[in-house]
Image (tube, rainbow, N blue to C red; front, side, top):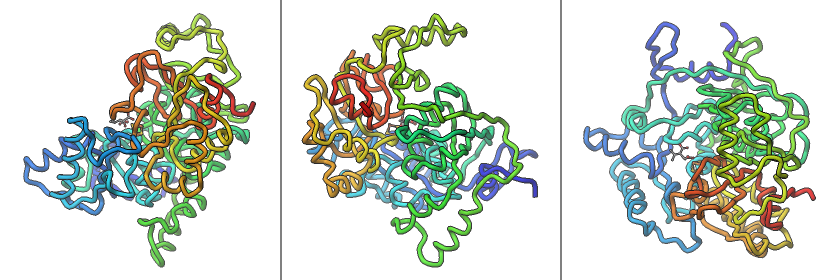
Length: 468
Ligand SMILES: CC(C)[C@H](C(=O)O)[C@@H](O)C(=O)O
Ligand code: SF4
């Protein structure tokens, strides 16, 4: 057999039927999915209209995240009417179709991708399609994940299969040793800046190299989460012992004999020597530093000790215009130092940076310090399980003592459609993944950074390096 890439292996084990000779379009078996209240309603309505059942109810989990308020005293149902309807419809669909739904009453509620991973529902070798672009982050565990639209959610629910158009297969190899004060978030912003926001457009990207291997399972999730921001539809890292260790004993992980068999199979999940990729890139990460975005696209980023770049020095006219527009929206000037820019808000949360390691990292910066008087700071753990663990470790107290709001789980300020929203001209340093215009509210300004940078900025009242 010809050498195959990891992507090809995952496709091969899930192909029910090839529609054309070269197999570029296929019917794929999908192992499981997760549905949220925001992108699933029409899919369930189609099931109802066509009098269809969910083919494998146990392979479908429902979570409430996008429109879910995060206030510590939130009610079971959002008070805002549309949000309440969406939440109640998901619950109703759970009952009608026999699906488990984690609502605000459940100790397992959380952001869909965070919950799927922490329960061990995402495993190496699986294929998972779900109604959200960041499903791609499951690649951190050697699972092919990708976002799908409403009609595909409907198709999946009814059949457990999807029509699939194969992606271009790209490899991004990181060379050099990652400096120890550079987090997974910094590393991926560095990579996104190098590749550009469209650099992996329409690809499944496999990341290789020592710097990737060195990341913890949680760090790999952060890393693969933001691969979406350079256009990747799926991302992959070959799973290794760190991932197996992370999964062991999780509620949905295989048990006993099945565990041994699974691990034996999981060890085969890597690209073969000599396998051919459609596209390759090599990025040196030895000089990477803590990063902050200055613009309205995740690739408009600088390291914490740099100045904001000058559009006049950009040769490409389209990129120059984008930069000028971004500077004007962000209220910034070329040549200004990124460190020292005053902020009004600091936020830690989202499927990018809301896991226990992120909270520990931020707490280590905040310990014994106080939020700057001009700053409102909030932390929204990725799941209620993480929130509980953080409380057991006393992290909540560190956040609260520093003057941070300790909130409940949901997408919150990552996209501001749940009542957590900023006002025009507010400037937020945010441990999320998207800094588009209006992402945190109309006219708001978002700077993406690691939890450590967000924490140190909250104390200083301006974008600040946590190392100084
Ligand atoms: C709402 C949803 C479709 C969207 C996505 O697919 O990514 C959201 O989660 C986001 O992060 O912008
Ligand atoms: S936390 Fe943000 S990126 Fe993740 S699913 Fe929610 S809205 Fe999308």
